[in-house]
Each structure stands twice: as structure tokens, then as C-alpha cells.
Image 1 (cartoon, one colour):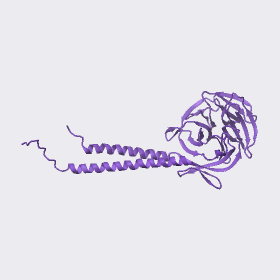
Image 2: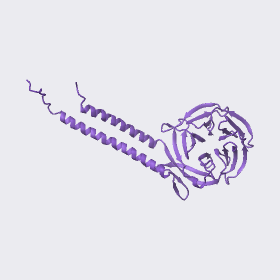
Image 3: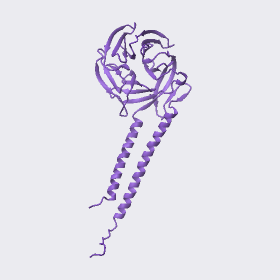
Image 4: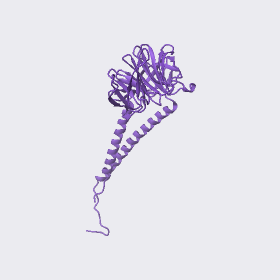
Length: 335
């Protein structure tokens, strides 16, 4: 029976290593280049009621409008952007857990968590002038020119009709091909949806056509939570068309932050003020990034070394096989 030669074995191993190495390089390139990190530049701060469990936030006509949640605490508020004072409010009854908020056609639309109702408020009077029903949970909402964009805590965004609130389309949101769950408060800016990711201090930027995450902002460290025990996660993104600034806050946070986002080409994201740069990644996150780089480099170098050894063995085997083969002699002699 014909034996399995060394060159055949080496060839198979070499091919396997080449494929593995190519996949590793492609995956590394995708992970490093497909999602752009953004820095946060702080312009100034505004006082924010630390009794507000922020669920939705928007800017219109020079005022902040905030939706607050929790049963017994849910409300709609109009806030002075210069001093943070609440100038008008609507308080829901204890059966309502309010969620995301958006503006359209001189109306404010406020979602509810599990009541399956969207309240439509008159922009000036805060009177409820209509309601829309929907199935499933309501989390965040924002307005595009042709539809509402709504989140429900999953990795999907629902596009809804501006007049009827009926579903038009559903977009699956992915980051480097992986679904991103817990999409929460939303803000629509041109063709991009800015979304808080619940349980984190991260904001992601989503291309609404493809559902792909194009940018990410890590705001861990923006608020020193050790000084504010009641402060919870980041939640609240509002875009000011006049200044192109964003106003962001969090649940029970004492401040609104007026910020810009700009591209970052370094490993570490930063939060930038007028006087200092604060390293945004805590030590654990930094150690994790470093360890990930080490593991990636180790795998790459191991594959290269293994490939080199295989080639050397193959060359030695070929050299030996080109020598004349000796005639086999039967034990005890033969003709």
C-alpha cells in the first residue's frame, strides 16, 4: 500500500496554516478599522435634577425636553438650557413608566415601557392630544425626515410611519457583524442614529440604511460616580442643530454636558475639556486591550513560525528523496 508521504502531510498542514493566518489577518483588520472611535470634547455643563430618571432627551427652540421614567416618577419636562430649571412639566399617574421622547410637527411623542402606548402631546400646552398603540416594549425614539426610529431593548430598530405609527421596516443593528443588544435612548442626526447602550456608558452611531455601527463613544469617566452614589448609567442624547453640539446626561445625574464628538485615531479614547485630557479607559479596560493585542500578536507569530518549520521539513524531505533509492534485499539473501 502506498504510504502517506511527508511532502503530502506538510502540504496539507501548510495550506491549513495559510488559511488560518489569512482569516486571522482579515478578522484583525475588520475589528480595527470598521468602527471608528470618537473623542468627547466638553464645552460646558448645566445643572440637571438628580431626581430625574432620564429616559429621553431632545432640544427644540432653545429648550431641553426630557422624559423621565419609573412608576410614580414618570414625567415630561421643559428645561431652561441656561440654568437647568424646569419651567413646565406633566406628571403621569403611577401606572405609567415613561420612556423615549421625540418631536414631530409641533408635537412631542413619548413612549411607555410596557403599556404599549405612545402619548402625543401638544408642544406648547403639554396636553395629550392623541395616543398610538404598539406591541412590545418601548425604549427610545427619534425622528427622521420620513419616519420615526424606535428601539425596544433588542438589537433591532423599528421604522414607523409619521402619521399612523405603523411599522414600515425593521433594521438589525450589528457591530463588526455582531448584533448589538440593549439599544436604548435614540437621537437622529441626518442619516445616523445615535444610541445609548443600556447598562453601559457607551454611545454608538448607527447607519440607519444598513444597520451597521460606524462609530462608538465610551463615556465612562465623564461623571465621577464615586461622588454621586445615586447616579446611574448614561442615558440621554440631544442634538442642537443651531450649534451642532450634543447635550448628554444620565439617570439621576447632577449635570447635563454640552459636548462635541470628534474622530480619534489612537488606542485610548479620551474625554477632553478646555484645560485637561482625562484618560477615558479605566485600568481594567486598558489591561484588557493590552492583553488582547498580546494574544493577537502571539497567534500571528506562532502561525508564521509553524509555517517556517513546515517549509524547512519539506525542503529536507525533498532533498533526501532525490537520492537514488536502494534496492530492497530479502532477509536471508535473494536473486
